[in-house]
Amino acid sequence: MTTTAAAPAPASQRLEHFPVSFFATVMGTAGLAIAWHKAHLVLGAPVVVGEAILYLATALFAVLLLLYAAKWLRHPGAVMQEARHPVRINFFASISIGLLLLAIGWSGGEPGFARALWAAGTLLHLAFTLMAMSSWIHHSHYEIKHANPAWFIPVVGNIIVPLVGVRFAPLELSWFFFSIGIVFWPVLLSIILYRLFFHPALPERLTPTLFILLAPPAVGCLAWMALTGQVDAFARILFYCSLFLLLLLGVGAMRFLRAPFYLSSWAYSFPLAAVTIVTLAMAEALHADVLRALAAALLGLVSIVVAALVARTVVAAMRGEICVPE
Image (tube, rainbow, N blue to C red; front, side, top):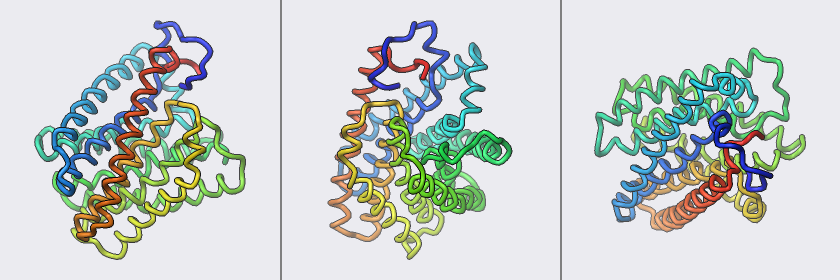
């Protein structure tokens, strides 16, 4: 998954090593589509941009789902190996989060299709949350060195459910999923910060996952606004927490820019999109020109980041450096 791979893997072996973390590309592209759609409503950005990206994200998800289903059928042992891996197990939830984000993207123009995506994503995400948390509790192979921000994906991803769940299902169901994510977010945050502060640094290929720290407060703010219909003190706390974390990560920007490309580099994309979306939402709710300007800058940034990630992924794929044994 890095551009420094020694030799391309034979095509016959690619499917066996097709990683579930590839679905993070859907999270990034769908998040960007939602950001552009929100920018159309708040900043007057061209609507066609968001629509085009949404179609691409949907097609990408369909292709990846077919490939991973084929892997499941032909190499079930490889899928089980990922499910038992202390890091990769968390990326199964990127499949369900992809469905939920696509549901948000299609909710305006195709509500029936969006409702089906949301229902599938919600049920699947609950299953992946239970799978991950059961693994953490009942297995003995976890060590503190395994803790990393990717652990947020299965648990805190529940916060995404209410974003359109308030329209598609009884309100209490959205509160149920929001409660899971918002309660376990500080628990996992404490574990991960302890690991970052007092233990060796993350492996180089996991460094981009630090950006996942942005997602819980950003998405949490959006979910809280969807559930309560207002911008209150708690919404502001979550929003400004996400902005602070963005500043904190920005201090080390050169470190991220110098890092080699890995498939895990897609961890930059969705969190940046989430911060962009919540900034647009807050700018709209508070009628704040400063936040509008910030949102426009963030939209440009996340668009550049996703475009760069797409280019790097295509180059790595052409060189046979993706879907190879680690």
